[in-house]
Image (cartoon, rainbow, N blue to C red; front, side, top):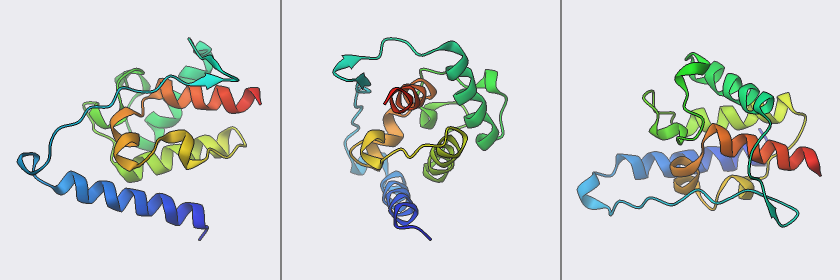
Length: 133
């Protein structure tokens, strides 16, 4: 088992513990999704084909129809609510499909940020940025 995979699993465990904490015991924090950048320039839009490919990969992992995924809504806030392990699987599937490695720090500072901000569009922006390098 790779160290990267172990780190992702540890992030999942931390997020699961956070999710299990009653809402009354923790303040609700909603972080705005940071804008993806490419060499200092903000990524305004992602190619529609790439966006649909990422949406399909996420849908396959989540066992839903691609049309059921809103591309701008965090995957954890969708009707089907993706969990931490789903996010790990989606990122790994993207890495395999696009033959790239997506460092954890490109996903977010910690698992809570990843879970609260990671949408299909953000994932597509990360893939587009990695492809342009």
